[in-house]
Picture 1 (tube, rainbow, N blue to C red):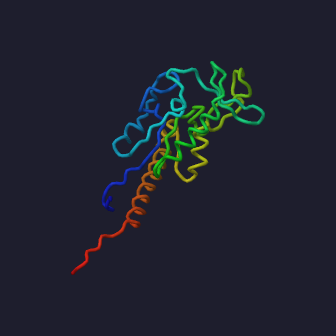
Picture 2: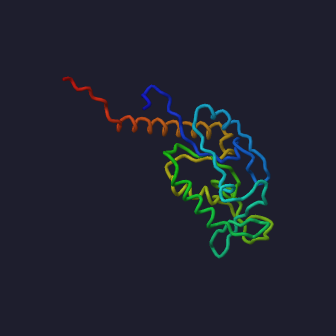
Picture 3: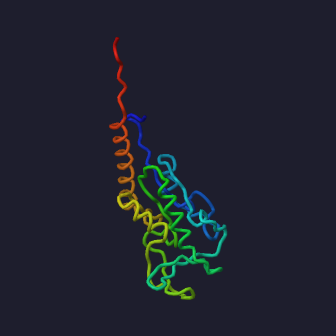
Length: 191
């Protein structure tokens, strides 16, 4: 059990393509100085939802299609609808996590974008008609509404990065305090 003087390490889920693996559709790793600097003082849980649902690397990109007022996740080369597979993975993964302090997700991703995933009206549409959350990120926001979440692009802004760090370290500290309060004290009995 950690004492109050020990450092509270935040637990953060991170898109695996950000500094943790060549899992993007084009086999690249996304560079992030912010994530690099945090590696020694947080516990990261890397995940790539697209690889976890069985897609290979490299792979043809995915696209969010707005069809009959419903969003679908489609792989372009095969026209395969991966919506249910992604939703099932997200539910299972998010339900299996320990207590978390934050998320750092990949911007513009059809699975991980918090706010800027491209949404197309049709499969063959050349330009997006809207932007929104990716499928995995949407479930993150629904399941963890009080946990801070940000993308790697916004974390390049010093004020956003500072706010993110304040929130995740405060959450980790609060978790530590709660654990200490619920720990049973050891009592020595005199005979």
